[in-house]
Structure formats: structure tokens, C-alpha cells
Image (cartoon, rainbow, N blue to C red; front, side, top):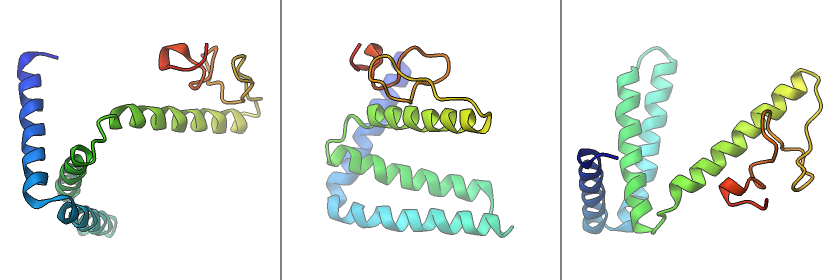
Length: 135
């Protein structure tokens, strides 16, 4: 990560922390619900042909900002790791569904015996030593 990107990220984090410190956790928890509702409204308008992708983007940005504020307030510094794990699990589900649709059997992981072995891998995500699993 270059210096400009690190500086911009540090500035954004500081701004998010300032906002949550000013308004407080309780207010921002209510704001999450409000912003999520505004996003849902923008999505519904778009689906009915009365909204725009730009309005959806604005509402996503609003919601992400409030969620990021709560992330720092609650000390959830490992969100990226958790997101990565959840993405891995969902891709794994998709791969199993694709195998099912193709009429193929699931491959068994030699590490744990589970049937979650993704195509092209020799261990499942839970057993992969590169991801902190059991080798």
C-alpha cells in the first residue's frame, strides 16, 4: 500500500471515529436501521423503474459509513478476516451446488473428512494451513 493510500485510509478511519465519538454508539445504532431502510427504499424504487443506480450507490455509501463507525466503536477490527471466511464459505456452497447440478460427487477433504473440498484444492478452507486451519 503506498503512502497516499495509507494516509487516505488513516484519515477516513480518524473521521469515522470522530463521528461515532460525537454522536455515540446508541445514536449510530439507530442510524444503521435508518440508513438500511433508505437503501431498501432506493432498491425498491429502482426495481419499480423509478430509481437510479446512483441513488442506490449513495445509500450504500451512507450505510457503509455508519457500519464502519460501529466497527471501530465495538472494536471489530477483524471484520475483513470474518468477511473473507464468509466469502470462502459462500463460494464453497456455490461450488457444491454446481457439482450437484452437474451430477458430480462432492470431494472429501483428507484433513477433516468433510465434503466441502472445493474444486482445484487439496484441502477444505477449514483445514488449509495457509488460512490457519489444521494441516
